[in-house]
Amino acid sequence: MINPKNTAWFLILSILFCGCGTQKPKENKIVAWHWLNDRKDALNKLAADYKAKTGIEVEFKLFSPADIYSQKVIAAARAGNLPDIFGILGEKRTLGSFVKAGHVLNLTAYMQENKNEWKQRFYPKTIEVVTFKPDNSFKAPEGIYGVPIDTTVINFVYNKSLFKEAGLDAENPPKTFDEFMDYAKKIKAKKGISGFVCGWGEGWLLDCLATEWAINLMGEDKFFKTIKGDVPYTDKDWVEVFSYFVKMRDSGILAPNITTMINKESEDFFAKGEAAFSFNGSWAVNVYKQLGRNLDYGFFPLPKISQNFPAKVWGGAGTSFMVNAHSSNKEEAVKFLNWLTEKEQQEFLIKETNNLPAVKTSEEALSPILKTLLGSLTMLTHPNTWPYNEDSRVIEVMDKGLQQIVMGLKTPEEVAKDIQEVKKRVLGK
Image (cartoon, rainbow, N blue to C red; front, side, top):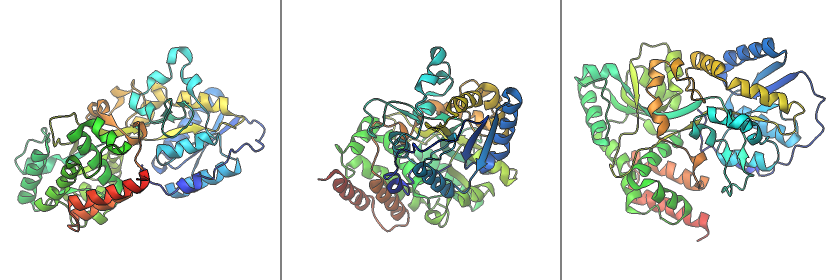
């Protein structure tokens, strides 16, 4: 999964201009750019099927890694030669920049044809990620600007084999933070391994977990008021959220060097059975399968720190494709993406890539492990669907501060103060 807090491209995007250059004559071929190494063969197979069905060729061009892909898309936007179909990585403000520059086709009219048939296929939070509502904070024109092809959910993960060996019920994962801590300590004591591992060298995973706990503790209303600037990060509820990272640190359950570990390292660590718990996305199903190990594991939603408000989990569209608004093939590109998100093609992608589908009619094709994530689809939250979005400078200080808390370098109160100082500068106060 691409870091949703990546801000490396914002300054570049600020100088994007409308790519309204001369377009090539219309060809009987659709060109699509992507970065999805793990889905290269599946996408090429679908392209071949589409050609056999319609006579129209679809050429998927892979550019990897993701940073190289993003650079290519930005350069193509500036030069006015984007392909017919492409994806945009990063925060929703990044998509908004492309939309405002006129690079992305508004799909609302297509989605609403035949009584909203196409739009209604998708899980609501999945399509919402690529939708701009009226009066949105990004000042992008209202509309739907992307076609999701899968859904991502971030959950806790646990090793069922280690549960059994520690005398715990492998079909009953923890529901609260206290239970989570208790189980992690018991497994560590019994097996001599880490209780919890995560790629906290990538700050967005810390921010994701802190966000989920904050919404659970203070509710969405107060959480959004903080982002808006009406509630300070020095508020007692935020300090309490940060204190849970202290509790995890002081309990001794955390894997060594967790604050320098990237997510791929964390996934390998967990797959080897060297930790009882992890915090990862639904894409891990495919990762663990590719690692080729006989891992018996399961997912469960956020262990609650409060019963006052519902728990939320990060999730939404994992991968989405956009249509070049200036493409001479845009009508054919839209037809292809419509076909790509029909039930049969979605079920093929489920089987080949082990990702959750973007549409609601494909649940029967899910593997048992993916089916355990379906309940989380009713609990989703994501920055790209919020009424307000935090400034990247504030997020950066929070991520670094949480790492410092875990390393024992700063207290929750000190981190809260650091975040609020940056927030004040952002607000101009």
